[in-house]
Image (spheres, rainbow, N blue to C red):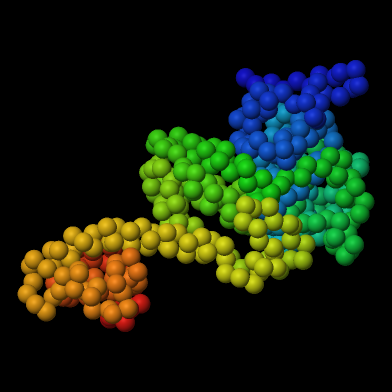
Length: 415
């Protein structure tokens, strides 16, 4: 069983200094709690986690949606002396304002119309353990006052009661909001912010540490393969580059969902660009939030440019379509000579040989200067004539897909 024991040194700090963490120990922590990534920003967050976890200090975890705030909160509880007691997670934004106070502190029978029985609140359920207040930035001001009281004195009252209760709970809070900005707008109490902010762990957006994507993909792929009883065959370098270039507005959670879907439906097959493109969903419109952080992806895109252009995922999809079409075209050109010879041998005039086709254009002396589109158009016409306008057979003889043939027919006005 893994046990984390804080050891005080001469300076009273944990035996691990922030800038000299033992990598083997960190790997054990990451594996135990499902944390993936080896970038400096991830190690910095883990370092603060290890320093704060053994204490009773309040922790504030900030970061965009999907960066793993609850994972770090749970790790802080499991690494603390309270790990034998409950870890209660509360999503403050998911509970209506009218019910939040009752859910957190409980209520007495008759406190409101539907209160037919008394109820134990989340704080009481978490006694001696840890309560995780996720999305605390969405909490109403009136409820914030009561949270502050619990933090300062451990006291609270149930809704509909004047009896004061005591509770021993460690509070870990998280938010994807800029609380400093909310304070200035009067939406969040300054005194509560300072009380929550004993230790601040900031989790980076995925686009800020794209170097961790290969490790994250490996972690999620192996996890889902174990669950489904499959063998993971890996991912190509081109696919990794595509993933690194994506905006990841849903961060690590979005990447996990994508990998889970691909592995499940493709049965653990090697993830290639051709497979990846099938599962990249159309991106949502970019946020117009003026506080949008700087971009750190491999493709340099300024937020204002991104807001006014097509979504990056759609651009990637189009580029891969072009790449696929070029591959089809290469295969078609390699079969041109064979196709023309077959047409010449199995048809009567007015069908022409390849040399005769070239001579028809007075502006062309050799195949080297002949325009590729003219050759392509002529080959398509000949193939269609040979196969009595059967597009499937014509596409097979040209070595291209029916989809590509249909687009070429439209492009050359042959429909």
